[in-house]
Image (cartoon, rainbow, N blue to C red; front, side, top):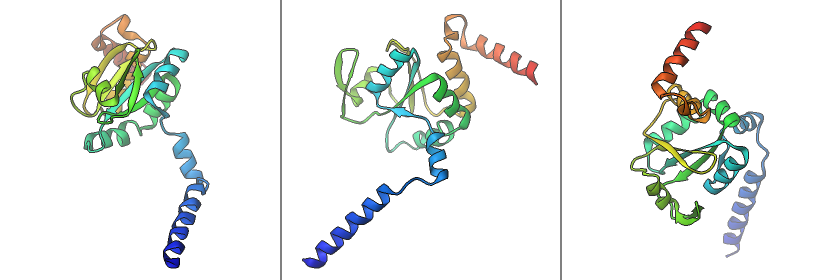
Length: 178
């Protein structure tokens, strides 16, 4: 019994030491350079307050492409920089039964995913600053394809032109700067 208490105390002490250990400089810079993911309700409220679009990453724990998108797209320095400046980001486990309130209704995250028409993972949902559904994109999106989508939607270019026209203008302006 005394030996058991010793080991339990030792494990608690070890866990406390690990959890209270300050971040190294590289860990700090990684954290500072990462996307600031907010809980869904908090993201919607902040978007309204700051007049920014919400990007919601609907994922599942078992989804391999979700992990690839986390690493290669959401971990890309240009996506991180853009998101930090112009967007409010939220991650939602589409299989969670955790409750959330949205547009005056209480539902689970699973029900929220269904309400947004999520059928596969990852699915990225874009919501206006007023909390209105804008559009969604299913599947993995590489960073170089994701950035133009973010720019098109967050800067509200969709109000003036199609995405194809936007991409043509973007390509023309890129060619002029080369």
